[in-house]
Image (tube, rainbow, N blue to C red):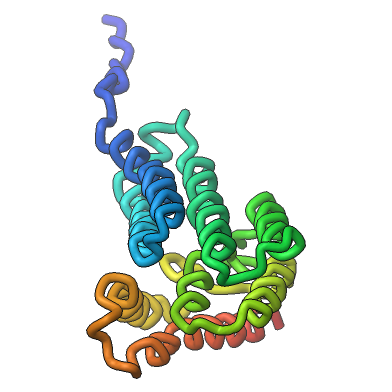
Length: 239
């Protein structure tokens, strides 16, 4: 009697709703980015930063969820990384630059704001911007966080403008910056300290009137930690 050929189960045709919802979650960052722009136009700067903080939270959590439910395997024709880059460029670059110009945080001269945007364009287009071992190459265009600190500290416009141009130039620097949710060395302390810092920064835009004077300068501990660890790991992993 001839052997029956093995029957292979047909691939499931069920719609992966969880994957679609995850992509919608990622795309919602663009919606909240528009809300931030509208808040800036209305002069509601703290509300604008609240929306920006929300987009950071979305960006910081969607990738972990995507890897957990294997979105790239179950919904391969929607490129989550491209979607993420589109939303990130809008919320990390366009929205905060518009806010900084509109509120006079930096100069409205085109040489200043266009320098930031053009540098970020090349940063996002750089195929080596994210290394294989999960680092950012060059300043990773955290302009929403830069805008928040420049707004809170209230430094002179000329100083702020010079600072953002220096950071824009660092987009092209061959320096490896840690990817907080992915870079393996010191990942646990990076995530724990990042969560504490997240609480501090949210408080800066939600209830600034009740915070003590030391709150703002103390929140710099994480940016200092981030840059210091990035430079240390850059030196030790590239030599």
